[in-house]
Image 1 (tube, rainbow, N blue to C red):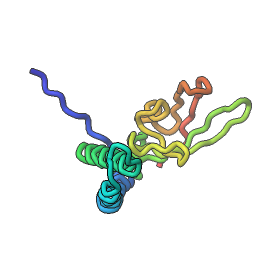
Image 2: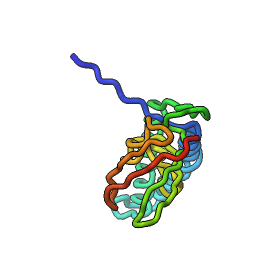
Image 3: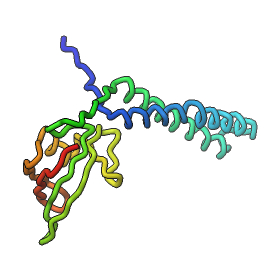
Image 4: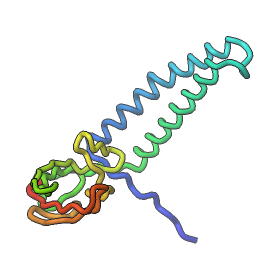
Length: 161
């Protein structure tokens, strides 16, 4: 009989704190509000044709599902400490790379985060993304190639913080 262990969810301290904040908001504010809406709508009569009731029940289900997701993330979470003196890229590191786009060389800075913290628009990329996978474990001066939607991109690691 084989025993499977659930892989740990790696998070930065900021990511962990954000999930805790969202969970608290859902449990202490949103869910009680939604439950009140369900109770109020229940008083409107026939539940089979009560749009307010069905809407409130759907909101309750979505809220409870999100709460369960966040609890599962936190239950399996391991906080990865970032060390300022690191020489290899890992979760919590800020990485500056250069790459060519056409004839122009561009620079971009990423914060490597756990998969539940990723927000590419904010410069946070998951260690499980194609770019994250290519960068993790690499050092300043290393060159990595990543297949992106725009084609193969070659990144040169300029700085790790």
